Image 1 (tube, rainbow, N blue to C red):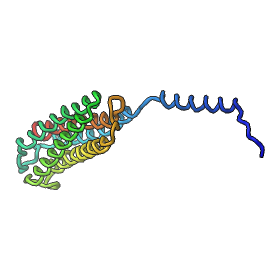
Image 2 (spheres, rainbow, N blue to C red):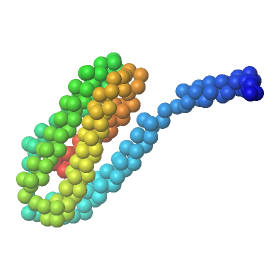
Image 3 (cartoon, rainbow, N blue to C red):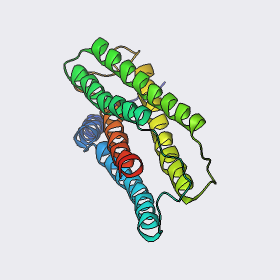
Image 4 (cartoon, helix red, strand yellow):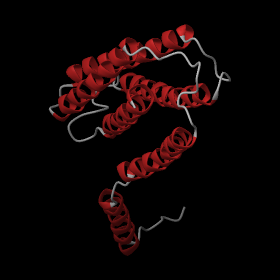
Length: 207
């Protein structure tokens, strides 16, 4: 049998290549938050278009809402608004907790935020079932359902994202003070949903 010799030069070269590759991966900038922000800007442009259309309808029609449209109740939407705004502060507590390596506190705050989001959606469904107009009653009704329904879809996505983060947090040290992108991303998205609703509430219920 012929013995195989190991070339020290090749070994050193491979070691240097592996070290360089590892260092390159470690130094590679993380653009995930930037990507999320770009995505939310795109989503915001869609909402901006819907808001612009609504304001154009309001400005050009002789009566808005059209005559015969039942007035919207303010109590339930007002409570829903307070609930959603408060949930943003609760969500921020989850991010603060994980940055202190408090995984248990993070899970608690995330669970509360998800529950508040579900309560908001249930309140919206309840409002839909008690409205005295339907999707095709008139232009105001159509605009109302499109705006609130599209926002409700985003709230649903946000709740699912929070629950997904909660599910992944079951693994020990999956999130910690150094690694918590999922929580930060869910928080930024949730704040976006909150701001959009504040604008919607002002346009539909107060203006």
